[in-house]
Length: 347
Image (cartoon, rainbow, N blue to C red; front, side, top):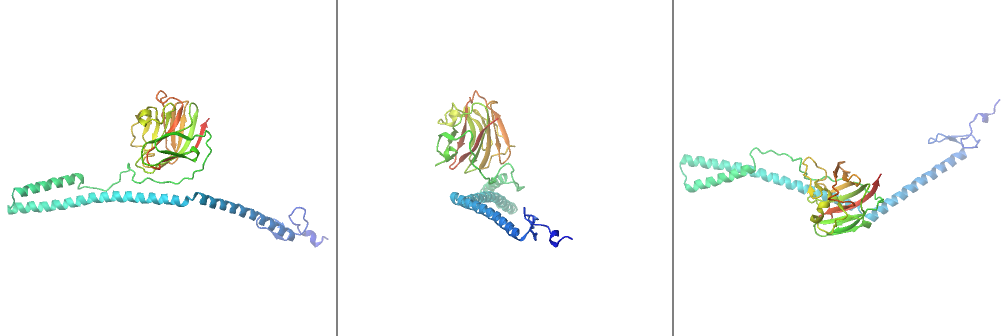
């Protein structure tokens, strides 16, 4: 006959023959009393490790926020965009109201004139000065009605962007494999962050800045972010022949420039391509994350807009823009900026 203890299952801990008494709901193993305590200690140590990693990460986040102190600044930028957008909408609404008021006022004046003419005819009471006055009134009313039609309707123009949409993106600094940086410049251009940031200073005026790299053969992808202070003005990203000096004014090097303006107009050597009314990629916006593609072997360039997912490309006439090429950016307004994110040669 078997003893009572021989029917009991031993602890699941390796090598332990003690009777198991407690099941762990997490791992479904059943332990004896000593190994229950040991198992709990192991879990406690694992929890301590997780808490330590959490505290370390939290401290890094706090230190980063304290170091950059940009959280409040970002919210202020959003608030400023909101306020400016409201002002634009209110201004446009007021202009529409004024047009309606002109229409309503003209209708009332027309009614008054009708009554005066009717009464003058019935009473046969008018002289030359009255006729001149009524003629002047008719001319004024006619002018008002040509500007504001009596069949006026309220509608929106989808081709004109009143308020540009903002978007938030996280930028992770990357090592520039080809080490593209900003170098030669013309105008009020400040270069910072070890040559990876260029921005316009002082008063609004034409300013240019070039990259330091020369592109003679192969294919390259350069990523950058452009920020405009004001959507009314435009910036541009281009290539230019290395033989053309940026220290000269734009009209002296424009024959060699190929690229795009942020109002969606393309520059091909000395020519600007006709504006396409159906195209709306960058116009009216203030922030652009661009992937600029240079194909020296096939003599063409292109770009990809990260936000709109729109692509464009153009062929380059190397008789106008001889190799090697270099990057050329145009800035106009105060605080306009370009930040280089990454650069690599494609296989």
